[in-house]
Amino acid sequence: MSFNRLETDDFVVSADSITAGLFTDSRTATLSTFFTSSTQVAASSGDYYLNVFSDAANNQLEFAIAYGDKEGSGSEAFDSAVVGKSPSSTIYGQYRNLVLGDENADFSFGGTISSELYAISIDRNRYKESLFPGSLTLELSGSDGKPVLSLTDNSQVVSSVQFNDAGRVFQLVSGSAGSVATGAGGSTLGYSANQGSYGFFLPDIATLLLNPLAISESAGIETTAATNNNLTNNQTLFNALTGSASNFVLNSSETITSDFIFVRPRSSQFNYSENPSFISGSTGEVIYSSFVNNPQTYITTVGLYNDNSELLAVAKLSKPLKKDFTKEALIRVKLDF
Image (cartoon, rainbow, N blue to C red; front, side, top):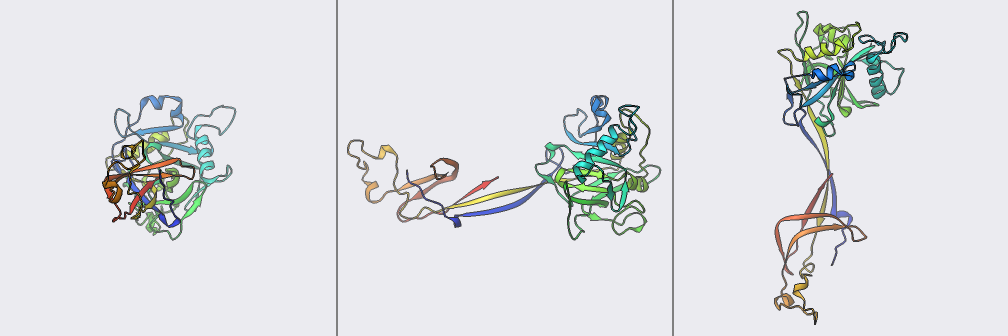
């Protein structure tokens, strides 16, 4: 068997960003129907989060809603003798460690400190790498006569990207599909009138953190400090999502790295077959005279080997490529990873 050693200039690396709809197995970017599972709500996990499905049979899990409060309000304490330790404080602490990386830090949404939060965590099966900034539209039906609140991220208007322990972080602002609208009180940032931004958009961990203070001010969606086992606050956000005018639009994003390898059989190379049927077993001579002076072969496969002659990858041509002394070939092999 003969080999051609590949040179440095035979390799080219390329990276492309691929976007797709986030919901229902990447078939759509818009989710307008929302369901919960009574079984999950009644289970112990219902004290912490609320799973949201796109079908009544609960087969398509899309995301989960969770409410967190630094002081443990909104849920029943683990131990009545220990104040402030409950499922809601656990949720707040979990996201504080994940996003801020400091168990003593507080969330600041557009300059407003908040001791509570809503988390919308996208199911891992819905995306391959991250969420796509600028594709978000989250519509929440208002309460107490307030209009629908439409939220997006500010990735299209910021001059530099901020980072924290969760990767890239963008502010949630009023608007849709990356287009920032004037916020409450005429804010050109898309913030609420007095309570800062509406939260964080964290594409690298596929999470939205909502600022309950800003949402309450603009949409009348109120949290409660009353203790309960199933976290009524989760249901409050779910009800805002399921309003008649509500939609959730979002895309996923994936960077595909491609390694292009250019294989160049020269005119003098790979013109003879090494198939044993072409060679006489007794004399070692070529059986067919046409293969002596005018050999012809057909390239069908390219094998890539390492220095130990171990086959690493195989590329198949769409059709056999005729090769003789009068022809040279350039075959481009693409490896995606």
